[in-house]
Length: 350
Image (cartoon, rainbow, N blue to C red):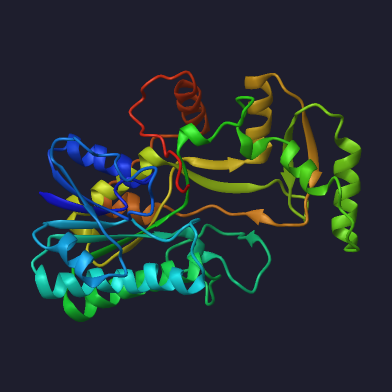
């Protein structure tokens, strides 16, 4: 198939393009010219056509959509130099432009796959992320944070509405937080997510009058001895943190199934991996692996969640492969300059 990948030079898009090429597809990569550090990533590659354009410009989107057999809409305003109005224009109106171009110029398309986010489950009116049950696809929050979370949810609503109203064969994947291994280690070669120093730096100069934050700051300052350690983070109720992450290679596996499986049409899936990080298990493992000590700290912000992946596993036969050990092995190999088949993210913006 000839497949359009919007955001085809990004951290997920690049690795998706690589996999689709391996499967024999031809690629049209739609790239925002402002992403100057990565815009030429596929220059000279066989079977990859790069189209420069802006999702906000209908004619640009028309050029991208015409003549393709399937679309992966991965591109979005995320972490770039955009304000709230631009986020909505890119993530909302940009998605609408794709859908309208499909209706007008490519009505027989095989599949439209939309990349959404786990963040649509986070309730705007609640502090932290505390779920005592597995998160299923029907647990979407009532209100969403601007700018990214809300505008991505708008894109999802558009895709599914166009499926049910106009017959566009849409599929939505809600990504859990994605780990690209080359980004995972800090300058000391340790998984940055679990080291103590960022928490110490947050609290070392705390001068506020919130009693809970002040107690946390006092604890953190007392435990810091100038040597890096791991941190076992606890919720306000004393339970260790639990978080759910996904290696980019598993994200790509799920995305590919989105065009290969007919059962994907008209469905929303949480796309997660084997990175369910329970701190009471992860921290002892890391201490042994890296020969480091750890501190145990209760934090004000609750973080306790895991996604139910039964729907995607059942309907699409999705089988995630990469747990924390696999991610760390990959990260360390990439740090040594080894080719493990993952394209590094690179610098997003100048």
